[in-house]
Structures are given as C-alpha cells and as structure tokens.
Image (cartoon, rainbow over all chains, first blue to last red; front, side):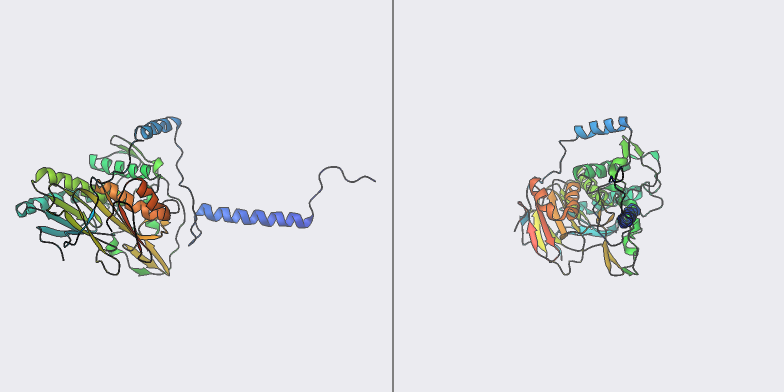
Length: 92
Length: 298
C-alpha cells in the first residue's frame, strides 16, 4: 500500500496554532510600529531617513575629516575647596 | 550664601543665571554683554517662542550664522555620542508634554498616553555652511547644547571685552575665563537649583567649563508616572538611568554638558566612557550614593 504523494498536510490543529502565532506577531509588530506600547521601555535603534548616495558620500567624507574630534578634558582638574561658592552647578 | 566677589543674577533661557567678575568696575558692562548674548540665543534657538528662528524653520532654508553654529554644535554632540544626544527629539519632547517653558507645565496631571518611538535621528539633518535642510515633520530641540553654547559664547565675549576674570552660570552650565580669584572659582555642585535633599560638594576650577545634568530637575508627574526632560532618542521617552545627577568638568561648557547629559542616558556604561575620555566627573545614583571618575576631587 502506498501513501499520499507530496508533503504531509498539516493537521487542523497545527494550522490553527500557526494562524494564532501569526496574529500575535502581527499585533506586536503593529504596536511597536505605532509606538503605542505605553509604559514599556523598548530599546530600538534610531531610525534614519534614507539619503542619496552622493549625500552619503559627502557625509562620510565630513565624518572622516572629523574623526579626530573628541570631548576635550579640562586643562586642570577641579580641586576640593572649603570656600563659599561663587556659583552653583545644579541640574536644570 | 555665596562668596564676596561682585556678582549679579537674573532669569534667562528658563534658568537662573549668575554672573561673577573679579573687578566691580566691570560688572555693569559685563551684565549688558551677557544679557545681549543670552537674548540672541533665545531669539534664535528657543523651541518655546513662536517667533524664534528655530520655530520658523521648514524644509531647506538659509539660516543665520548663530543658528548655524547652534545646529553645528548639536550635530557634533550627536556624532561624538553615537546619537545618544540627538537634536531631533523636538517632537518627542512635545509628546511627553514638554511643549512650553518649563515654569508653565503643571507639576501634576492625569495619566497621559506616552508614545514610544525612536526619534527621526540626527543623520537626516543636513547643514552645509548656512543652508539647513530638515525633512518634513522633524522638529529640532537644541536645548541640550544651546544653553551651554550660550555660556561659552558669553565668556569668550566678556573675556575679550573686559580685563578681568569672569564666571557665567546658566542653570547647571557654567564656564570661566580670565584671571581666576586666588583659590580659583568655587562651585557648589548639587542635584537641583535649590539644593534641597541631595548631597552637595564645593569644588574649585581655574579654567574651562563645568556642567551638571539631572533627572531630579525639570520633572513632572502624569498619573503615577514621573517624567523628566532627558530623553533617550532610541525610545523617545525619558531615559531610565542609574544616575539622577551627573557633573562633568571639561575644557569648555559645551563639552561638559554633552558629557553630563549623555552620561545620564548611557547609565551604567557612563563612568567608563568618561574615564576613557579623561573627563573628571561626579555621579549621584538614585539612592544618593556618589561615584567619581579620576580627576574629580574626593
């Protein structure tokens, strides 16, 4: 006796499970795309607007010329003092 | 209480501003020059003035030299921090309710729906000389760096015009120039402008800038959620940080501010980042414990 030719057909239960997973994935994707997951911290990389090749080349060149740029450390470090302050540095 | 040097205070850019000089005879002129400089920054870069040059931007536009400098500084900050400090957070700031001068924002309010979405990203901004191109729907917020730029510009201008030592402090951002007082400029570092509730320290500097960024300041409550003004560009919502306050000393105020604000966003990775950059810094965590990087006094 020979069986059916071709791939085995999924059972009704398997098909239902697959549809449920697809619905769940679609729902999550839609929520993230809409940015509507209130109160949940989601780490996403910054999106960038696509640019033309020539713009990219120019920008790449700009960035390469600025590669040596960095935040500059102070010429002398802060010292501890007991003096009355001349000013405040506070969160603002 | 402050020391005995000639000084004046006034409000500007939504912050308490303090000017200190080492020569009483220079104070009036220094005050006029400082007010003039801060007014120019406000008229150019404010997100809260409908008539500011920033508010009137759209599409591809020739801009003033001052706005070009402010945008250039903001883009440099984004580049140096891999986008952790991003000027395209304007729309996200509006979404969390920071859409007017902070003094006008109600401290408490009903639960608000917070939109979680990355900001457009600084790479979509194009600045060539004085031609600025911003995609439709992208709104700039230069608040993170424009205030520090104002401080640096002011001390440069005052230093060139006056033959004395000068300190300019706008909110948490300050810079000094010229001959320092005998023991240096003494600066009280603290969480909030009123200094209540948190640990304080007084340090002295002789040159450069010092900036403090804090999630303890400029915060408001919607429902049970506490919001603040330091946004993570990757989510568009207030950064969740191990630190509540970070102070950094640098060669100038802009670099100090970039480092301090980015440190809040980078959270636990920040101390090592600043140590590698040779930037003295003081961190206050959410429980009030203090940590410093090499170069910051005990």
